[in-house]
Image (cartoon, rainbow, N blue to C red; front, side, top):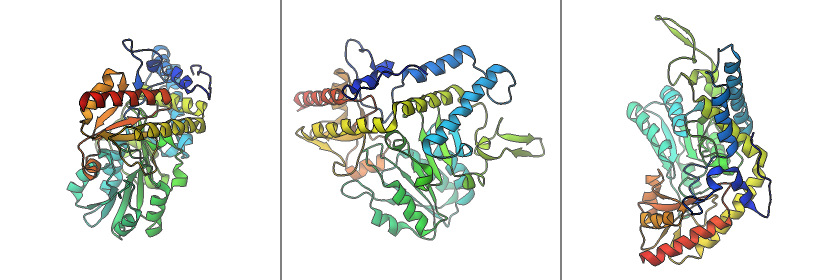
Length: 414
């Protein structure tokens, strides 16, 4: 692994030195990257290991008896063990996918198609990313089950009383986001799971931990869920790799999601048998280098220390909220709710896209739009928000540059 910059509690910019894209100016401008909820920057150790593997010993994994294949397989399967340890699961419960979206599609297409009927119901929430809505709607069109949604309250937190009222003997699945990618609202995931399991232990629970796995400890056993999904490219790893953690007793009942090489036991034109466990869900040559990169990202986070990272992010996030609240005319969504790392807002009288373009001219990179959460935007009564999201490399200087650029945008647009 590449050498890390030394920790220094008085200069949290030290984190930035691990990220080559943030350690130099762009066209003479200091870059303020505040779009980590969409995709994070990558530390040198991730880039270096992926490059080194391709330069020195790249080969296809599994079944190769020669040295390069064995070494690449070791790194690939080593990442599976790292993921399991990172989230408190077991190696035989970790499936590699291309992202969290594919993980949810896998669960819907395999477990959902095999277990849901027209007599059943599933529960989602109003704050879901489209990736946790559309796959269920596609399956609903085939099977005819009912989709119900937990509403948000005036503070944009989930209404747990309304949730309990939605539970019926027909409910087979509760699927929800751990941290909202649109507002940063932190959901009580353990409590939501506990309510479902107390009502009926056979209800399956899926948690989209795409943001949660970055900004707080996710321990799948303690959560009590049956499915937990996340993606690699937001966790300081590369694009093209995600994770579906599936509780072993559930996983062993699920049919394959896709067919092809590496997931089979025996093939003939009369019949095909499949491997047991996670291998049956990884058909074909996987994203080998990307998985290895995810392993390096987990090593990086572990070496840096998750508690130190969380402490730094919380301090920066509190400062972000303080500065945003001081801007006249700025509407900060879910301001009274428990949130982390993500601030979603608008400036009265200014279109989000116009503001974002002015920010870009000052080297401040944010995200505007519906953030793949159109149902939640409807609740907010807006088409788009401006979203500033933090990574471990974000600091108070980034917040100051954002707020200075927002004041400039106000002067130009109002």
